[in-house]
Length: 185
Image (cartoon, rainbow, N blue to C red; front, side, top):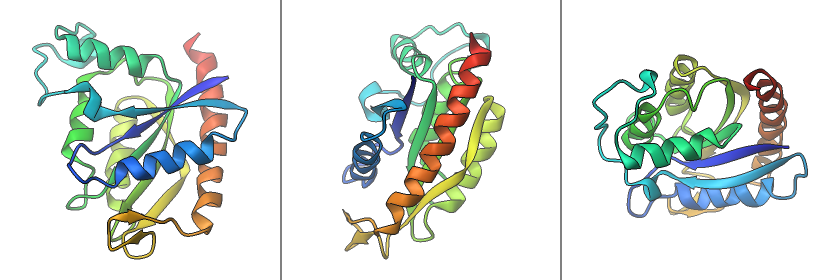
């Protein structure tokens, strides 16, 4: 059975991503084909990238980096929960991704995004980043609108159809995560 981390991609006070990630976790929790875990980048206190050696060299110096690397290394696949800020993912999420390298390699990713346009532009950038860190991203994506899936732009109330989309994305993610796990052995 593979282990999938649901990565909360915002550290902003009052963020919506925590509620969205908990919904993903709750919906995913009924599945028997994977284990799911919430991974909040806020818990890792990652400052702006402060490693003196590039991540691709796998020579981490700081304890916060080693802790982050250990967590990501323990997972087989990821669901990135991200808002869209100015047509992009959050700086905090990009920073967390950049901290490490090998721990991401040959794994799979799916996306749950939100924003005025469903967060799709943030995910477009994340898909490019995933290719560079050797993460295979699945096609299906959950796109949450601040206008229809949130009350007053802040209280998360997903549309009924969103759950089916989430299951489709997780189906693809589990298949790819299992396949990629075989090449990491």
